[in-house]
Length: 67
Image (cartoon, rainbow, N blue to C red; front, side, top):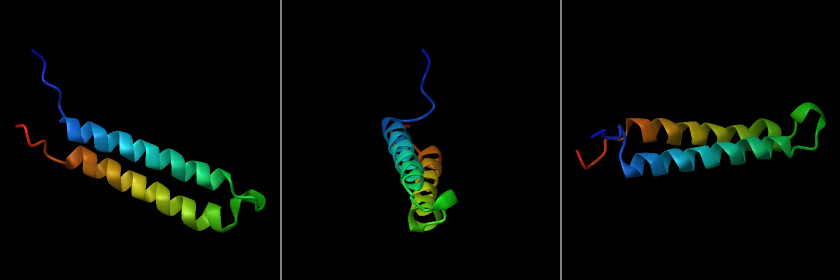
């Protein structure tokens, strides 16, 4: 029997992190300034993307409680 390397909460956090990443990159594309040099492209979008990567790192490092 093959045991999955992560628990249910790990996978839920990974999906949440992916959703946050997609939202961050989408916000960066919504910037109307040339070459993305507006507030959305330089400030808000990258902060949300970094939050998504932090959630992903936490999801990978979180120890499942069922072990």
